[in-house]
Each structure stands twice: as structure tokens, then as C-alpha cells.
Image (cartoon, rainbow, N blue to C red; front, side, top):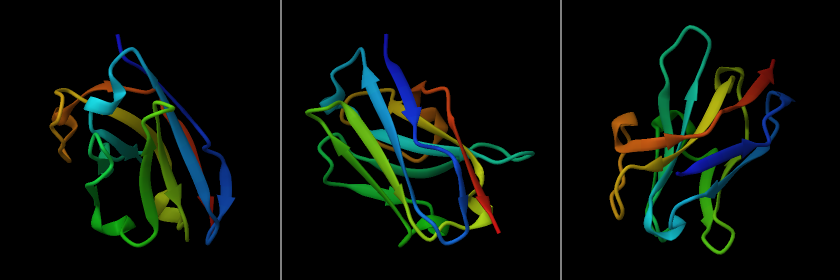
Length: 125
């Protein structure tokens, strides 16, 4: 059973930076794409970023391009989301997710079958 544990969320001022961390266990981490999603109050969960199993391919939602960077360390079974130039509209619960199938990546929630509990990111103006 895959377990994902996020950490790193907190209150930060606009323009600041945060790094979210997701520690994975229970599967062969290096074979699975990983993703970050977020859910703001009153809104549906949305895709933020995804990274391929080897780290060679990365995709982002347009609203975070140039500000967020997804990365992974397969030796540590960990995926990161570096968030810079944060804006109040980035306020959300951020979720880490593992892809449903090996060697497949996507930007839909349906592409992922394992989810963490979420970590709260609040950006004050």
C-alpha cells in the first residue's frame, strides 16, 4: 500500500518562498510519475505539476510556470515542490499524488491513485 506524507506548508507573505516535501513508501518509487495538486476553499482540486519517474519530464499548470519547480530524489523516495514568488491566490491545501500505473504520467486526477493527506499553504497579502 502506497503511503504519501506531505510537509512544509505554512503561512507566508506574498512574494515569499516555500518548499513542500512528499515522502513516499510502499511502492517502487522510481517507476511512478508523481504529481502535486491543490484545492482552494470553495474550489475543486486542480493540477499543479507533475514529474516523470526519472525526473526528465515536468509539466505545470500555466498559473505557476516560472514560479514553481517540481523535483524528485529517487534515492530518498521523495518529491518536492519549490514555490517562489507566492501569491495570495496560491493559498490552498496541497496534495502529493502517485500515478496509477508505472511509466505513465498525466495532469488529471484520474491518472493518480494514491494521495497524501495534504499540507496547508496560506499566502498573506
